[in-house]
Amino acid sequence: MSPANLGADRQSLRVLMIAPTPFFADRGCHVRIYEETRALQTMGCQVEICTYHLGSNRPGLVIHRTVRVPWYTKTSAGPSWHKLYIDVLLLFKAWAVARRFRPHVIHGHLHEGAAIGWVVGQLLGAPVVGDIQGSLSGELKAHQFIPGHGWMYRFWARNERWINRLPEVMVASCSDVARELRERFGVRRVVLALDGVDTDAFRPDVEIGELRSLVPPGRRAVVYLGLLNAYQGIDHLLAAIPLVLERVPEAHFLIMGYPNEDRYRQKARELGVADHVTFPGRIDYTQAARYLALGEVAVGPKLSETESNGKLYNYMACALPTVAFDTPPSREILGELGVYAPRGDVTALADAVARLLKHPEEARQLGRQLRQRVVEHFSWQNTARQLLTAYDLAREQRRGARR
Image (tube, rainbow, N blue to C red; front, side, top):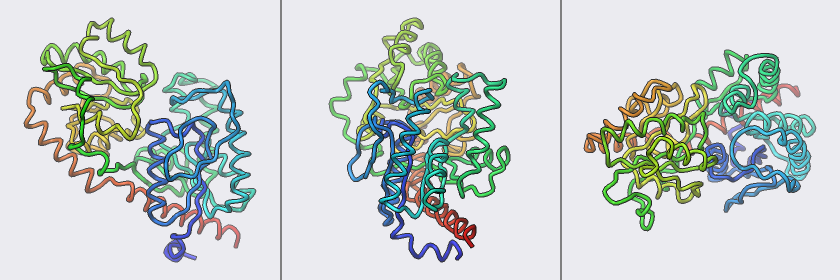
């Protein structure tokens, strides 16, 4: 049976998602899981999610959680040795749910989810799709969980290669991840499913209301909304602030998200810019557009050259002119409308932000063009259609193996 013929029963697909993370916790990976699920539901799929004991429930989603582990409370991104045994608990939960739910497809997020999904798929005879947003060994290195060389790095790279080949199909969130899967890991079946954005929720005309008090009178806001970690470029962003203020003294930076707010507040004090920086902390995803609407300029200085930079889609939908480091994922999202600085170049980053602030009409025009680009090219419905293609390929592969 061809993928085209498989499409006839897409409307009744049962999809079991495995999310080895404290879903939902107002961050990029979780937004992808949430929005993919909602988009698949609008296309008639029945989706159930297995995840950790931590996290908040979302309306309209069926979520199954592992047994509670009271000493594990980490909701921020990044690796943890505790995940090794919690993933075993997630495997048992996924198997129990799968026996009742009888999914047509198992959709494993991240490398751990792909591996757990494969085990359940083998037991149940169901095809598996892995959905990743970057390299496992690269993430462990970026979080300084393992050194970037030596036997430990090689061990995790070998395991990554093994996991990547387990599912019938791998889904990549950006072209560089897809290329790495094919060229570095030798994966044959790769489907590109870019992130998207809800342009009805994220738009430039949302009501700001009482949030205006976050920006002191007479100041002009530069916004960042995402994880507060070194690999996201937050240290570079803070280092750029004094240089921006030299040229635009009325600039004010809203650096929104979590974790490590206290550490970065201290760094802002050490740099002498604390009066020009506000750290509102963790922002509820449903309120994110209101906070972004406070800004004239957005910045997304993520350093990774392979992992997607999902916050950029939200900036674009809010018509914010956007500065980013010049990496392949940022180029893929922003195209020629992005304002780029060489990766890791603090001076160039500051110059780009200051230039947009000093030319507000040009910046607004750029923001309008970015909004148009995201409306035309990046929606969660497009992402869901690519996922359905991956599901078709996986089911065809499984049926071929049976024959």
